[in-house]
Length: 305
Length: 111
Image (cartoon, rainbow over all chains, first blue to last red; front, side):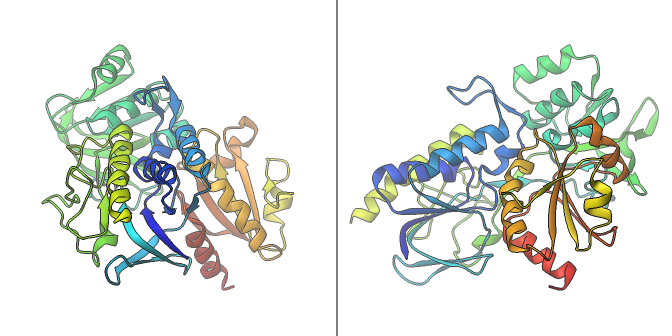
């Protein structure tokens, strides 16, 4: 079977694109490892219009159900390769061996957590080093933890952990954390949270599990900071490994360059969401969903021709 | 009916440690998004590996199960441990799409 549109990526951009495509009558399929993408790891979403407060996993589930309600199949497999076999003929090879054919492609692969890249990080992942505060925060009840980063995700994680842990350090390389005022005020209000600015982690130390962090800027005259857990929230980078064959044009940081209509440099290929340059790299659910919708509107015009 | 066994501190010994076939145990919790997304994958695998691998899950939010979570040093979930003859022979932390988990199981168990 050949689809009009294959959407690669099942986060907010991909699912929103699917909803718009289905409503236009475009035969589409969604391919993505985890439906809902990174929103499944978000503690709480409070800036999606119409939902004052919603858990990340619940949002992911609702968005998935919404897309599926039009009869669209969501293939929860990773795409291994995308090939352009000629005009209007793309082939996508999935990790289960399946091959999907489509006339057009929308890349909505989003981004992945950036890692610190310091000694001990890899070895202690899952043993005190975590990339998902919502998932793992619970294991640090009345313990001491650190959050690395100063963006909204880091601040959100710190506030979330502030309700569970005994003490939360926020380790930030800059002068002042740069998050929404809502988060900053929540941090200031909680005496358990302490921000260590102008500080980087040099090394993560532990034998079977995390024992301490080595800082480049001493805290209370010591370079060593004893913590039970460290949550890495230093932003994300685009998921572009899959794009080698397609040769879409990227910017200097690896984001896919798109036009105002979502078009990439390759004919028949559009992109939307956190992986693109489309929304000033704001990386919000609302911008991803909007880019998905905009791209599909253009794809619809293209398919009609 | 679901082929995934619900584990507790009471049946862990019998269903996991004394199982005649390998058991894939998923340590999960209701608040964890990736864990919830893992559930249908585990359901599918339980059917596909029926008779070869037992799939089971344990809710670590339940206070009665927290001693087990501590014993197996669970600090990140979803955390899937593969038991054979009462021993842990493999561990996977974080969400895995179905095919990846399936490949991992086949590799670990040589099936």
